[in-house]
Each structure stands twice: as structure tokens, then as C-alpha cells.
Image 1: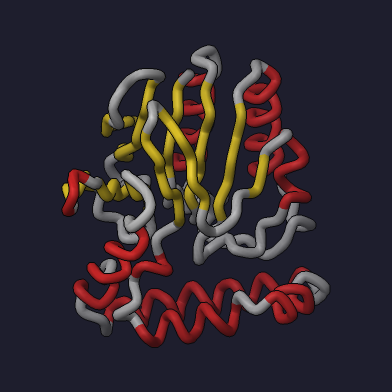
Image 2: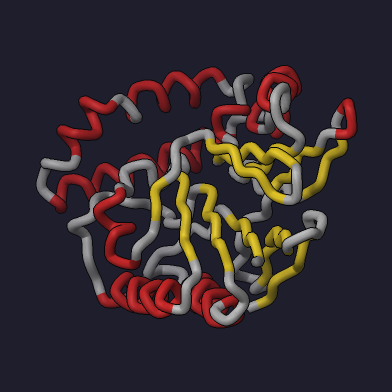
Length: 239
């Protein structure tokens, strides 16, 4: 069994190389009895399960082929694709995970999450997240016209870009106290979001593993692989 962890692909029709890279990854791991965990920001934006197009249909077809070989796909929402629901995942027998999920591998307990909740120093973002992720608001947004959701998503992307330009890197990184709390009852914390891939060695022999984002210009990503009876290993994946 191979456990594969990725995040922050930010797939979209405007970034075809990233899409091709993800399709290649599925093909590479198709015969390896793989459990694939996508820890958020799989898509650069998700405006609803009714937003179908040719590039997305190609991804769904590849995932259907991937799972037909006995592989499994698990997904946690990120800050860009929090509106993605189990309805879409049902198209290829995928499974939506809670925002915080624990997993036992090789007698070690892993905590999985996207990572944005750990960035508690970014008060403005946490306030915005609390509003936009409100279940009532999400319910209403899913029932608005598709054209309205597209404009809204573009506005959010622009606002996010402008906001990042004004913030210090430290504010957008994780808070150590939040990390310590997350690691309290587990051995390893795996997350994405910050785009700073690294294995951090915390107190009491615990680890925090940060997944890398997928980079279109260089065609590379840092992905995490755990094989049965093995230790977590970063791999540089090129596409």
C-alpha cells in the first residue's frame, strides 16, 4: 500500500501544465495500490458542482480510471475550493474528509488538515473565513446563478492577491501555539496551504510535514509518500 499526500495544485483551465501534471501523477500511481489524499486547494477556485467543462471532464475520467484499479481518493477542502462537495467526488468514488482527519499508518497517528486554520496570526483572513464558510451562506451561494458565482470567485481571487501583497510572511505562516495544540494527541501533522514544503521536527519527537504547492513555471511539486512499513518521504515530482 502506498499513501500519497498532495495539496495546493490550484488546477484551472488557465493552467494546463498543472492539469497535465495531475493526470500524469494519477497514471504513475495507478498500479501501486494507492490511497491518494488531496489536502485542499486542489482547484484554484470551485464555484459549484454544476460548473462542468471539458478540462474538468478529463480529470473526472482519469480519476474514474484510477479508482477502477482499486485505488482510493480522499479530499479535504481548502480555502480556494471549500464549496466542493461529496456530489462531485461521487463521480469517481472519492470521499470527502472532515477539515481535521486522523489516520493511523505504521503504528503512528497522523493528523491531516489543509493548514489555513493554523495561521491564527492572520486575523483578517480568519475573520473572513468564518463568514464565507458559514454553512447557511454556502447553502445560499450554491443556489445563485453560475454567472454570479464566477464573478464572485474572481473577486475573491483578486482580493486575496492584493491582501497577500500587504502582509508580512510571518503573518501568513502557521502559529507555533496552534501547531503545538494540533500535535498534542498525534505523532505527525501533515498540512499544506503555506507553500513552504519542509519536514519540521517538533518537541517530543513529533513532526510537522508541510506539503508543497505545484509550480507551473518549473513543472515541479514536492509530494509526500509513505509506503507500508516505511517512513514519510518527500519526493520531487516533475511534470
